[in-house]
Amino acid sequence: MATSGAGRWFRDPPWHDVSGAGRTVQAVLEDTEAALRKSAGRLRASGQEDGARQVERFAERARFDLEEPLVAQQLHLAVARLRQIRQPELLAGQVLEKVLSLARADRGNVQFVDRQSGTLRIIAQHGFDERFLDHFAVVADRASACGRAARRNAQLVITDVLVDRAFEPHREIAASSGFRAVQSTPLADMEGRLVGVVSTHYARPHAPSARDMRIIKRYADLAGQVLAASSSAVVPDGASTA
Image (cartoon, rainbow, N blue to C red; front, side, top):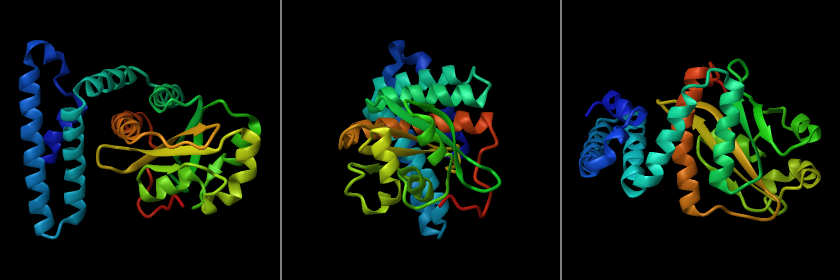
């Protein structure tokens, strides 16, 4: 199966057919995952590691939709509503609202990658004052959770900022802002290129469950594609986010 075909599936799955066709949807997802795993194996065997990882990302999305069909349907429907929003700031605000709900958090922010510098800049936030916003107005370091998540293009959790050595430069602002834990999840386009980061913060030491993190990641995968289409906030080739 070509990755372009898989991309169309994950942008526009046939959830409207679930009334009476649920088994068909499941069968298609199973076939999709199997074909993608096989394709990834062929790419890796021929030395195309980047291509293999990209195809594996599609396979992981199929696996999630198979294992969490009701959640997947809800996430796809939520993202379908996002496509009606044209303003990036309003769109980012809606993404943040959903992630706050999924993460069971009451404060957080969305940052876009600046196209020219590769730094992270806050575009939407909830629950923070001007001091926090000034401190994290532009992020280009390896200490913050969002900076590390962006650099690795992978989810990151700091369960307690007071014991995380790398976070030391930001402990004072964390204390004044009233958070002890943070999770950051990358937002990427269909090809896996970084668009931004969504982070949620917690008043006490905390680690979201593995299932919650997986759901947040699946939503971020979908929302990142919409954000990428609505903005030009994609890291330029060669730019660094840390």
